[in-house]
Amino acid sequence: MKGRRHTPEQVVRKLREADRLLAEGRSLPEVAKALEVSENTFHRWRAQYGGMKADDVKRLKELERENVTLKRIVANKEVEIEGLKEIAKGNW
Image (cartoon, rainbow, N blue to C red; front, side, top):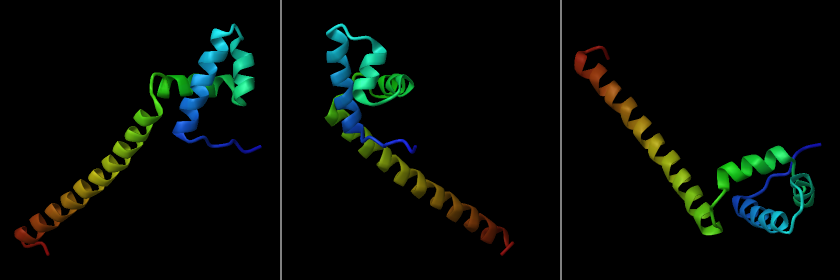
């Protein structure tokens, strides 16, 4: 059985629901079953998205995408610099 993917917004929503269920006195296995996830997934989500709100998660994802783009730009510039150094040495 292939696992289902949840968006970060869905994860935050489910964590809020879990907090509500735990406050009502339900046990962790019951909460995980109600959320239709394993206990390990619940703990991983809690560690990753613990105190975040939906807006925070959206901003985090935007920053991660921007970071990937910037890393790619820096890597391309490094390749260009190395190429220019080789040309300047006369090894072209």
